[in-house]
Amino acid sequence: MNSPGAGRFAPSPSGELHLGNLRTAMLAWLFARSTGRTFLLRIEDLDRARAGAEDAQLAELAAVGLTWDGTPVRQSERIPSYEAAVGSLREADLLYECFCTRRDIAEAATAPHGLPGSYPGTCRNLAPSERPQQARPPALRLRSGASTWTISDQLHGEYTGPVDDFVVVRSDGVPAYNLAVVVDDDAQGVDQVVRGDDLLSSAPRQAYLATLLGITPPRYAHVPLALNRQGQRLAKRDGAVTLESLADHGWSGDRVRDLILRSAGLPPGTLAGALEAFHPERVPREAWTVEPGNLS
Ligand code: GLU
Image 1 (cartoon, rainbow, N blue to C red):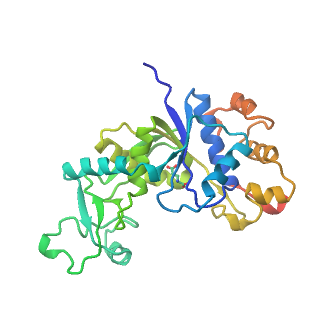
Image 2 (cartoon, protein in one colour):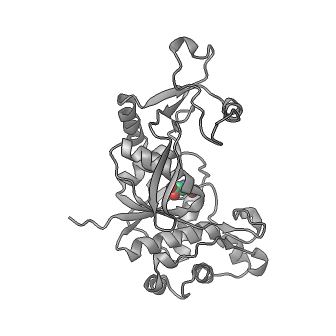
Image 3 (cartoon, rainbow, N blue to C red):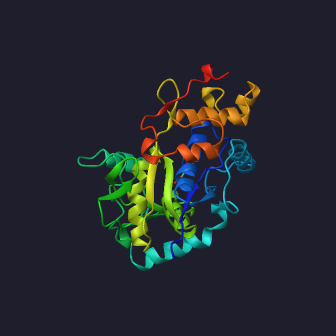
């Protein structure tokens, strides 16, 4: 009965993983393994997939010692599952067509009381006669019954964030990330989501959508990101921050693993040793500032 549950890492195959991505993956592995969970991979290739990136990312994860259970799941192969979820939302009258452009939304959102970044509801109650004449294909939005939702996060505690009528199917017909992530975590038995804290503000939308689909939301742990010296999110352009570029400076995968473990306050050497020393409550709450100049 007591199934162990699963944790996961879900990279978008848009290029090489950098130190920040690898650190998030390592923390997700540590959270999962330290709680007896399996650890799964999911390739989020609905959007920014670049040829060869998936294989490269799997090799990078392996090079720092990470192991995972089973075969990675690819979102591009799971379209029927997203369609089924869309079908059930549609049946419950929880979707509507939206013809707004980005610009429409940006302009409307500056109206008084508009919550920055939230959809103002322009198309929510469009009568058929009000549909744009030469309509471009519509996106499908959730007819949300909540304006906020509260999630439980191991590092952030009870976190309440806005829920708006967010997009579940994009105007190009591709399922939106917020839908796919909920459907996939459920299908993979993921009950622990560990990822970068740039996604903390998306979690209430996802947890709310999960409950609409009859899914119990996972437990979350949003971990601090890696930043560059300017305090911005680390990116490949910041210098030698990928395994490949660090290798050019003589860095082995083991040395990168140790750098990341130390950054998380864990003993270097092996992931097994780090696992013994790992306590979720001791994960640093501050972002990790990476100074590539000091790495080479
Ligand atoms: N694919 C997303 C990313 O690489 C992560 C999504 C998630 O962990 O929920 O940023």
